[in-house]
Image (cartoon, rainbow, N blue to C red):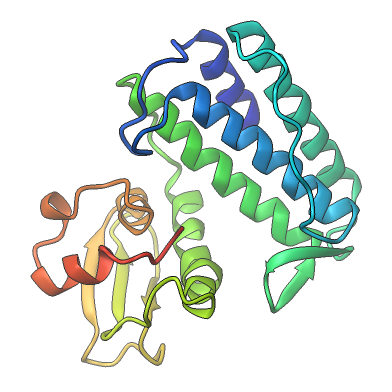
Length: 222
């Protein structure tokens, strides 16, 4: 469903249009990127390693690029739907080396980039709150810890507690994870929180606490 949505945007959009949420990228760049990520994720499941140089599109015109994207997206979906969830795979998470990791990761990757593409055209669709909240949890459990592990960002000096106003539950990012009184609290819709974490929402608009803005400005996500 999400790959079809992205493919429809690629089919109908002006591919030279800039993507504000991905600085210096055009929609064409975004399509090439996501198609390459789909290839890489498929390889990680099938071959069990990350050692793939994605096949670039032979034709970057509208019809050629769309067909290229749909082909690789369809292959990804086929592999993920026919592979057991507990089958071994290379992943980004030291605690989960199964194909199920990529089922979740590729949904979030595609949804976010579909939002990027639609936002570039001035017509972003709202994200499902439950799905957006799962994306927040993925940042907490997988993406942010990996950024720290790879030395891309220093551990947060204070824990940030994010609370969804349209979902049940909260999540603590950074700190020792116990959510004590030292945490900075951010409350908003799940989609807004997710986009803040992925640098796709303006913290000056959505975050009043100056220290929280500073914490969120770091590379908590790639």
